[in-house]
Length: 200
Image (cartoon, rainbow, N blue to C red; front, side, top):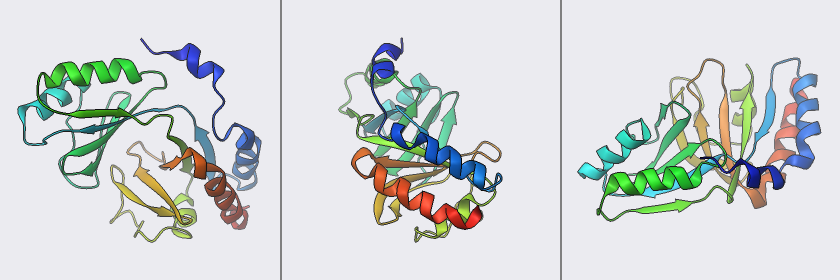
């Protein structure tokens, strides 16, 4: 069961910036959408991708752990992002850390693995709207053209000189998730707000 009581008492890293993000969204006339998605569950999972345990973990989560580099697989409310040959980031609803970790460990059986809760380490900024790619391109060296970084792609990269995990969401017009360390969230948000001015 999700621990929603504890998340209700916490203050998200960008709670103080919510009004500014909403104002930037309004002033862009729909060209840009900015918002924090606080408290998403984020588990770093490491195990042998070629082991039967990887398939069992995927089955327990209702998705297949992606084997293709820099891809994301979605299953219901969960997403698994490829971070390395034996490493994934599993993201889910706020407060579901314990339940997801238990499912992963049970499915893996006795196979050596690592499950680390990194939910408190990062927050997530939603960057959406028709000009989202243009906005991100101002501060990211990746080729963000849909042919190169389309829906279902992810990358560990830098945005505004800040290390992030960038996820191109696969829902229609859903935009991007920018997963950023909480200590750098203010810097990144200020950069996004400044870069969004030209679309206002």
